[in-house]
Length: 229
Image (tube, rainbow, N blue to C red):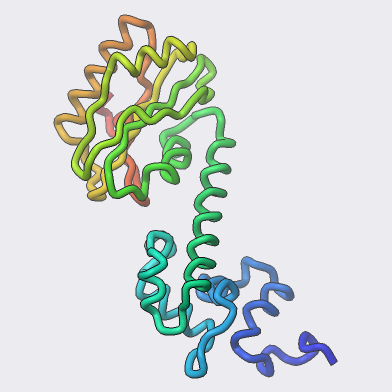
């Protein structure tokens, strides 16, 4: 008789996530059960599910887990190099999938959509980057372009380059985006001054600045939503 004919209570805990996925579908599994499938097995004293729960409890959430290095994962007893690589590869695929899904949101209709597009790109970086979305007159994204890359606390933006690229692409409007690695969503005075500088430059070229978003790992600040524009 095949194992699937036995009650779940008779299965070994290491096998349950796989069988549960086959019988109930992927949405029925917890994060720990999905990670257990990735690592395949635990140790003599700890099942794959228990090991996965311990790893997730230490990482706090999947975003934090995705930032762990091979060496950090191997600090958990029961995780060797191969298992660590499997976890990292799976979470990176998930991040890339999210990025691809966001790109399908071609027409920008809200600040939330801009966040969904840019968070996978800059939301989890440990340094600051400044990006611009170049849009046509239908608010469809022509390009996402990194303008500068800086340190933990700031970056320098060449305003002339912003509009050189806008004119080359035929963009009629722009959305400015940068991340705050600190997690602080509030714009600095430098952020406000730069936004006004770009906005004024755009007026003379008939290129409108639609918004400026500050992005962190899980949240964002929109200049338009907050009434700064």
